[in-house]
Image (cartoon, rainbow over all chains, first blue to last red; front, side, top):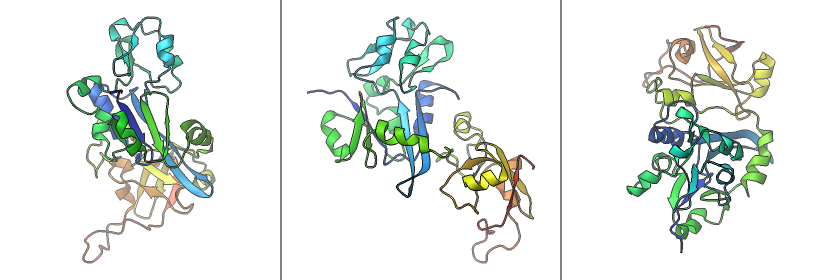
Length: 193
Length: 109
């Protein structure tokens, strides 16, 4: 029995508004620039004769096999009791090997030579709140769930995860073979008005 | 972006990072004929006036149609191309859709 949280990202419900990005930056006290979460737009592009436009919130996936953890020689990254990957900022030397090791670009440089990454809002959760991105998602595309609630959230659709974040989609079997491989067909990304 | 409503919040730096300037949706073929690449300035012109926006290329729009976004100020204010006579009776607003326009490459307010 595990009480580890799962951040479920429902790609069918994300419309790319970016409210999660802004909520995350406000929570972390960041200004414009690098952050711990960004929404990547894919398309619109034609797939099997239909226009498809997708949005993927990209953040730290808190990988079970975390390349950043293995890369960090300073002991600034550690696995917390809830399964998430956390930063010990005082130990961070700013060497940036974790940024290079992360395949998702989920670790970004922070002011003062440290790094910024998603901590799944550890402090908010300790106070009984949802993570900021989950709390502020107007499409309810994000949810922090316990393992027993996962099947209902996935609802028989495709799901994909390498750690504590689960991407769910009714359209794509995996981010790698589905969204990722089709990204090359992208015409041009844009910003919502 | 859900947090821009009319002209509200346009000077919030976190929101402006998301959408720093007015954008104009146009079809890639239309942009190519005009010589405009994604992210470049493009000017909409009608007999009423001109407004400048950044080009966003999308196949999700017909090649002979462009879509501008409202709420920006100055030379990016799309209201500058909308005629202000002929209010629709009973509605009290002017037609804002289906206006014939010309596109000019670059920023020519």
